[in-house]
Image 1 (cartoon, rainbow, N blue to C red):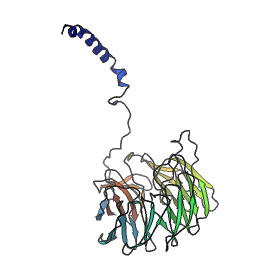
Image 2: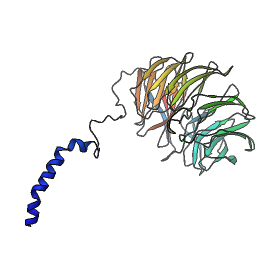
Image 3: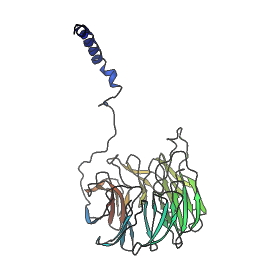
Image 4: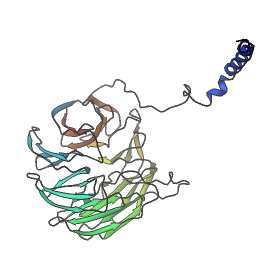
Length: 389
């Protein structure tokens, strides 16, 4: 006991030294630093609403997980949707009434394409599946080289799908036989995602993790055009990630595409020459409205570029870091959804807020426009049709 009492002054001295040096201990950040700048999602403020969102109907497919882009698809007056567990449904576009449903028991990673009376999707196991759009009966199933994380596209003769190994392949619409493929060289590091192929002017367009965009003949897979949107010039492997994961757009014979950590570029499809280029980092789809193309960058800043010159017409950063969806163009508005279940309506000409509505308790994952309506999907597997007033 005496020995312990003799050490008391030393304990007091050590304690005082610790207190006096607390500023240096703070640099170790055991509990964080209140003064440290940390980017957080923007808080919403009151806006003057000129446009309003009204729910027309809602249906639920039930989905706790999402492996890829699960986008509602409209075809012949029906809305088709599939969740990652393989439950697919068809509902009437006007009323939301269930027409038919089916549990395919597939682990779906790509979402759907529905066209030419055929439903197609890719699975986590690397299958591409074709179903009859009338009732969901399976037509054929073929093995691809890997999984796909974005919907395929149907040319009428082939179903074309891009897989995460850098390959785009064309499968015969009737037989499911693979007729062609094009293999790109992947960088060492890539993002988890694939660009969403689309068909325009009789060609298939898509982007790759190499930062290149390509134009294919759908029947043969022959390349009509392949150009870099961003060059791989980073110092580290992380800085050299320049994936094109979003969908490009075509406006007035200009192909406009954007990359992560790179550029948004416009390419003249007549001669393959670049027209303009601006800095941006995005993995979201682009959308066009009038003479502007709109993007959501990697920090959820919404930007509008002039399609002819690439000049920035406006920026909207009041939704920064709110995990926005890809933008959708509807009338003279740009619509986006966020992680708190809000739909935001922006004036397409100025970027100013026109309206806002909380439509879900879950994050909005996808948003599509049809006429004067929006179709949205959230992370719980719920699909809603919204009317814009």
